[in-house]
Structure formats: C-alpha cells, structure tokens
Amino acid sequence: MMETEYGPGRTIPHPVMFRVLDSEADDLTVPEIKVEHKSEYAYYPGCVDYYDVEMQFSHMNYGDTNHGIIFDSSVKLLRAVGIQPMILDRSFMKCCGHDQLWQGKVDVFERMREYNTKIIKMLGVKTFITSCAEGYRTFKLDYKLDGVRVVHITQFLYERGLRIPPQPDTAKKIRVAFQDPCRSGRQMPIDPVYEEPRELVKRVDNAELVELKTFRADAQCCGVAQMMYCNDKTKGLTAKRMDEATDVDADYLLVACPKCLTHFGCLHHENKWKPGEERYGFKVMDITQFLAERLPGDWPTGSNIDQKRKEPPLPGRRG
Image (cartoon, rainbow, N blue to C red; front, side, top):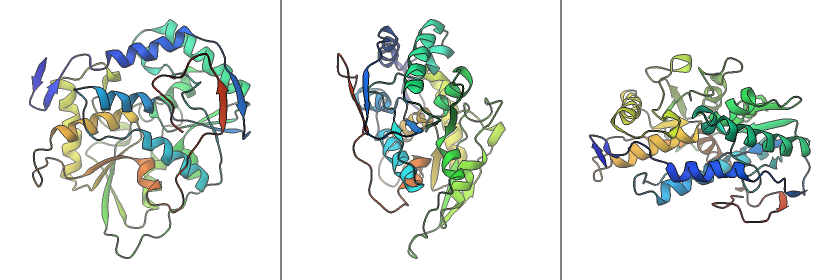
C-alpha cells in the first residue's frame, strides 16, 4: 500500500465498483415498467448510490461525504420550478457507461447505451435532466438520443427561473467558489456549463461568488482521472485545487460532479487533524444541496415508477 503526504493511497482505488458497474451490461432484459406519473421530463441521478457504497465500505475512501443528497436535492429543486419528473433511477437504468468508454471498454459501453436508450425512448422522454457532469457529456455527445434534449440540472433550473427566497437577516455573508467539472465544461464542444451554476449561486442573497485561480474553460481538474488512480499525483491535483479555495477565503467549495465531490470530500477528511486545526476550513458540497438547503418546503420521498425485475438492484435504490 502506498503512503503519501496527503494520506494513504492506492493505484486502482475502485476495482469492486468497476466490476459491479461493468456487470450491468451482462443483462440487457428490459423490465416491465409502470409509470404512475407520466411526464416528458425525466431526471437521472447517475451512480450516486454506488459512490456512497464505495465511500462507506472502502477502508481507503472514508469520510462523511453524502452523494445521495444530490438525488434528494435535485428532485426538491425540480419540484420548486414546477416539474414533477419521472425518476429514471438505478433500479432499472444502467450506468451511462462513461468510465467504460474512457477506459477502452467500448463493447461494454455500447451495450449500456443500447439498453438505456431503449428505456428513454420507451418512456417517451423529451427532456433528460442529469446532475452528473460525466452523465451530461455522455448522454449528450456519446448517445444518439434524437428528439431528446439532454440538459444539466443547473442549466434547467436557470432556464426555469429558480428563485431562492431572501435569507434570514441573521444569515452571515458567505464566500462561495465553484469547481468547473472537466466533462461539463472544457471538454464540451457544445453547450458547456459555465454561467448557469454561477448565476444560481448569485441568486442566494447572502452569497458572494469568488473564482478559483483557474476557472471556466481553464479550470484545473480535481484529479479524478476517471476514478482510475488515487496516488500522490492525483491527490496533489486535488490538494492544489482545495488550497486555491483556501486562498480566496471560501466558505463553500461547490461542485457539480459526484466524482469531484468524492475526491474533494476524501481529501478534506484526510486532512482533519483535531478540532481547530483542520487544513481546510470550508465545506465541500454539491451545488444542488447548497441551493436546496436554502429553499423552503419538504424534501422528496418515494419514486413515481414501479418495475418488475428478476433480481433486486445492486447495491440498492434511492428514492
């Protein structure tokens, strides 16, 4: 096992998760799906349930990072702009295949794409919303979803005019930095997601948007490397980015990619020594959670789609 100045690390940190996700391509049987609420809008949370399992049960990737809150926050925000979407959760949708494609497992990716496309077309989806930067790029560029608009949730919320009510007079002013994901930003030749998340942050009246040293098309990667490596080099990239948030005196470092959340959250935890001596004094959070926590109203429970499968999903469903 490798030890680095940033904490323990290993070259391939997620072999079990990769094998589980790859195995989804082995069964392409389309389940019987009953839609209780028909809508042209669909929300796909991505692989957040798998990331939570990895964070909770891997002795390497510890910490209190909560990926599932992205699902709950996204649905709450969509309802706030008048949308009750169909939830295309992982109990019958498969991984988008991003990692498989970028790791050269083209056959696995193509089977996942074929299956997911059938589900999307079968349900009559017209607007496909995702909160995952990698899912956004993959469904928009690497799928052939003719007649279906693929949109990142920050784009959709901005277009629908999401408004955050005035914060209490007692709410202190906060400085908020945003990490531009590689996949939804500089690696998107069309419709890169730069302005929308920033404009949403500006709608929080006690929040001041501050920029990291590199941002938008010049933004540095968080160090995720398609989840293929966790070593001194990748952690060095993560640490550099987090140090930049410290340099601008950020209270929050917001992300729009579950893998950015994983890596920032993991390093944040590794560098907690004892109360009052944390290396990083800011909170790492997905932008959907940041916005949803400042929005009144109930948090969502339940899913609007029931389905019959031969076996229960792994490792479980949210919703």
